[in-house]
Amino acid sequence: MKNKSELIRKSIGAALLISLGDYALLKLGNPIGPIIFALGLLGVCYMGQNLFTGKCGFLFQDKIKFSDLMIILVVNLIAGYLIGLVFSTLDADVYKVAVEKTLSWKISIPFFVKSVLCGIIMYIAVYMFKKGTPLGIIYGIPLFIFCGFQHCIANIITMGTSRMFSASIIICILGNFAGSLLMWYISKDK
Image (cartoon, rainbow, N blue to C red; front, side, top):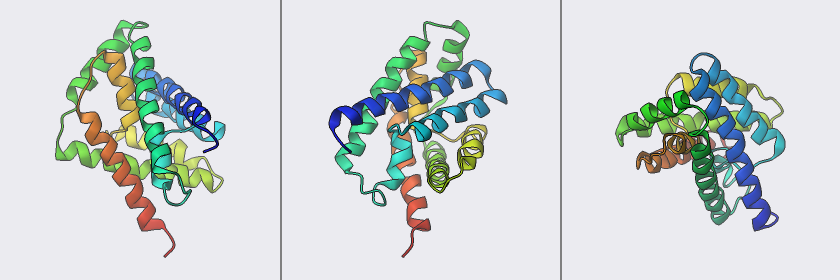
């Protein structure tokens, strides 16, 4: 990364773009919300923003410093939560949906597995984008949402919107990271 201020700025930008997708998901629900949500990751990729779940699988491939990845994660989490807090004041229905979702997240093996599966999809989506096609994003993002897979940055935004916090975010971060690295390891050239 060029410098820390750019790293932070682009990490805030990613949180903002994903938050727009998350707000659409909370507001519109299925089937439109998951499709609109894809705009968030399309924006992140096309605008070169720093999203933890879009970067973690490329840690070794793109030679990202682990310390930079941790800055991206922390900034995504803080900015995402704060943006969610703003969203909580905009629409009572969105707030209620966010509360229901946040309360449903429990620390469990199935929640971790759903986080791993989301990490796999995120790696594939960004990998395909880097190869010149947005189809991984266009199909992958609605896929993980329709399947109920867990995305840590979207989840922290929802937590902010619910004005709550759940320790399940730790499991989600670890699962997203593990899924992305697993897919990188499986797909890398030996």
